[in-house]
Amino acid sequence: MQAFIAARKVGTARPPQTNTDGPSSGGSFAMEKFATALEMVTEMKPEGPVFAARPHAAGRAARWFIKNFPGEVAYAYKANSSVFLLGALYGAGITQFDVASVAELEDAATIPGVRLHFMHPVKSRYAIRRAYFDYDIKCFALDTEEELQKIVEETEGAKDLELFVRISVPAKNSRVPLEHKFGVTGQKAQRLLVKTRQVADELGITFHVGSQTTTPDAYGMAFEEAKKLIVKAGVVVDAIDIGGGFPSRYTDSVPARLSDFIDVIKASMAKMPVTEHCRLICEPGRALVAEAESLIVKVDLRKSGNQLFINDGGYGALFDSAHMGFVFPVRLIREGLDPNEPLEPFEFWGPTCDSIDRMKGPFMLPRSVREGDYIEIGNIGAYGRALATRFNGYGQYADVILQDEPMYSIYAEELAPVARNA
Image (cartoon, rainbow, N blue to C red):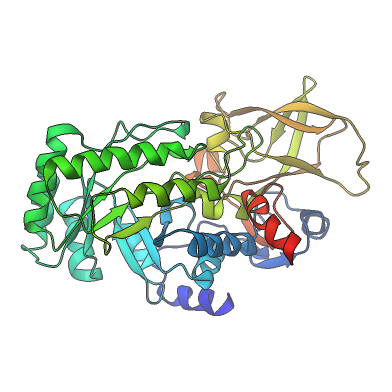
């Protein structure tokens, strides 16, 4: 991990997202390790919010995917670009990354020996040129003939392109449907596949079933749509990229086992009209890092019974809770806390002056929670850090590493049989 971080510091293309100005914001404590969140708050007594990473959880998730997914695993960089978690993923064997912008590809390119996929279906001409000529990226996604033409022109008619046509598939039981903005269907998809086949060295199909998809049949339906289009277009497909969508565990979301998803994907792939050499790729983000990071916040005020005003919120790492309704697991961090104290539902209010900065939960906490207490908000590793802003002057975080286990782990059930047979 230390070697990875040192190598990244040499070539990092953009500054880290954490503050390093001093103890008032907690920035000077970056990279300190603690056994638990209680140990951390007892020693640091942070005034600002703290990102508490568990790299071992990210490494465990990566190893599970590499072992169980029947193809290549590329991490969705947008989910979390923390150097601590990237180092854990890389150390576990993740060397392919899905990037969606020039800033992401510049940052990811500093990781030794990586292979990058530029899978955003709409890119600027500048981004295409930089990706191909400066970073040797051959792999691009598209969902229109106009985008295909841009790629051909800006790579100067390159003959070594790996082009993936993004198709639209139904979003079944996903928390964040993604089929409306990107993806092509029907005769347009057939025509685009034929035209892309004519210029691509490798032709691929890609889709996304939606973020936090809780049932495996969503992938089965997506494969069926891809199968129909391949047959109707009459093209040879060299690769299928099933995107992300794999779920994590939250208080209000208990998805199927990840192994059930893998079973459906294997069975569906076996029925596809492709050769045995066709590559299968996935791009998990949430499932690899969600449980690998927590947010530690401080209670500034308890108001009107069960309203807690905390020092981070919807303009910070809790965007998904404020705007998407995610209910993250929480626990009160206090020395001598009675483990048998009854829990009550609370709602959170963020530190900004905006009235929409509200996380309604409910978040179950001991009834005695009060001003000055610290709360760990778990499983925010996916998109929490990435979506934080500096609105109202907030958005500064310390970084620490915790060595205990996440509050929820979707991998615990997967690994339980191994533990029982050990």
